[in-house]
Image 1 (cartoon, rainbow over the protein chains, first blue to last red):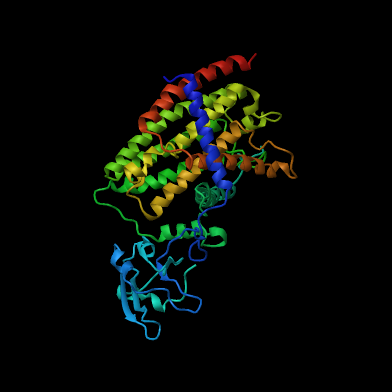
Image 2: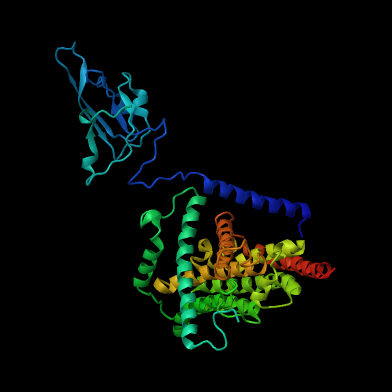
Amino acid sequence: MRSGAELVRGALSLVQGLGVTLRAMVARPVTVPYPRASATLPPGFRGWPVLVREPDGAVRCVACGACARACPSQCLRVDAAAERGSGGRRRPQAFLLDISRCSLCGTCADVCPAGALAYSRVRCAAARSRDAFLTDLLNMPEEAP
Amino acid sequence: MDTIITSDSGLLVMAAAAAVIIGFVFVNATALGYIERKLCGRFQRRHGPLEVGWHGILQMPVDGVKLIAKQLVVPHNVAGALFYAAPLLALAPVALPFLVMPFAPRLQVIDMEAGVVFVLAMISFNTFAVFLAGWSANNNYSMIGALRAVAQNISYEIPILLSLLTVLFLTRSLSLRTIVAVQSPLWHLLRHPGILLAAVIFFIAAIAETNRAPFDLPEAESELTAGFHTEYSGIAFALFMIAEYTCILVNCCLATAVFLGGWQGPPLPFGQYSACVWFFMKAYALVFVIIWCRWTFPRVRFDQLMNFSWKYLIPVALGNLLLTALTAQL
């Protein structure tokens, strides 16, 4: 047999537990009925990377390829070309991201010397084939925050 | 006589009363199923059913139709007739106690002299059905669930009887109508501290008796898949669920009548009938507490379950009965 004090403590803990669930019952639900409403993203949310653009619409990317080399999932490919008439600066011709392989680690944005990559706030992607996930970030609408 | 059925009422009145009771059983199970799922959601900070109808209110009827339409999958080597009889046997007896429940002064189907005994006997019948289901299904999970159910129900029947005896000593009647009628100025619960303790013991034992969490060992899904109703599908499964919800309400009605003053409450117009509002409010408040407990407490171990009844509840209930019987007469 347990001691009386232990029994009283146990009974009080049961009441305490009931209090916890009662508070949860009157609180607002934290889930949302998904297709008709979506949860607000936390401020630090990291979606897959997007290219940062200057106010005139030009990408900052200098096509050095550091992101593609650093990517642990090897899901980036940068095709570079020298742009005529701008002092021979390299510009990306295609900036391919395979969304289906990206692990959202953010290493690409960390290593970028030009600060040309940012985290987007996109979190949904659907396609009918694997190839369709291969996205050219140059053609994507601006989604960087 | 103030009851609906008297010694000279015809067959038609009896059939009508039975039909109303059966209808009430099904409506209650549907409503409680919805309330339970909604409350479960709220306790876990979810929404619960939302899609079918306003705030998901039609979810349970839709589920019921689905279960009725589903194929009954019967495994090989089940004990034929017994396998089919078990779900029916689970539901039929637990619906009968409503016949003797005094919902309001003039709203009681029949007033039995031994009403309390009748209710307890019918609730115990549920154990029989559960055991039959587990035995006939030819499945080890079902069998273990059934054995647990029997052991658990035998153990918790005793504290239920002892705690009810505490009140029956004072009322000196087994008729539920008389028990409610004598609580006119003051509920039994408030009359004596011993009765308050008896009510708490009754409530704990009633949760165990209805196989509800935290005492839902017979259908512990993490260990036994679904326990005694593992092999039941479609409407057979639905009958077990309806029986469970009916059993909960019967236990809460019994607690309401014996401890909480039944229909007693502030006077209402047409009080001879409308006083059932108070009865149902008290009964469903108790149902809420049972659901609340289910979604708060984790399941106990089987040895803890047995120890709790035999080492704590029964000695305390026995001592409480003696003390109350001695002091209440002074």
